[in-house]
Amino acid sequence: DHLQAHFPMMHKIADPENSTAFHYRIPGYRGNIGIIAAYTRTFCGTCNRIRVTAQGVLKTCLYDSGVFSIKQVLRSGADDAQLKEKLEQAFSRRAKDGFEAESGNHRPAFESMSTIGG
Image (cartoon, rainbow, N blue to C red; front, side, top):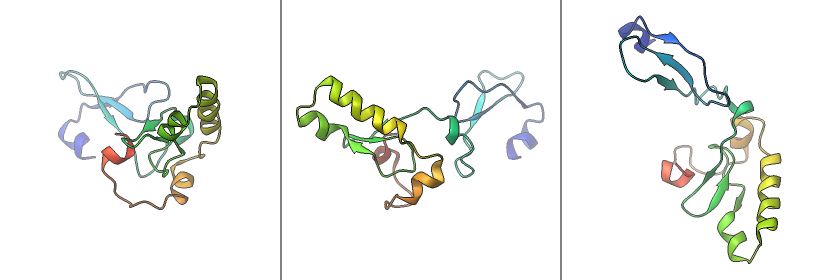
């Protein structure tokens, strides 16, 4: 609403497939604006993103506490096939949405982007 009040010509444009943002364009300006609705978590069902934290932990959702440590798997001597199997298992067990992922998360509510692979 704030942006629309200041830029009344702003209009919704098509979102790329698997986008986590709602995209808008303002005529006369370069680029577009992407707004991620983090609190409503409306994109969770189509999200295809993963993150790896600085500690080597795989996260399939910003709200989970980590699925497994890629660092430990690699340091244990796993080969490519074993790593691929672990990754496929993790991807197939993604939470249905951010609320489900967060329900098992025992980490602080507000984390630095560096701790969540950002």
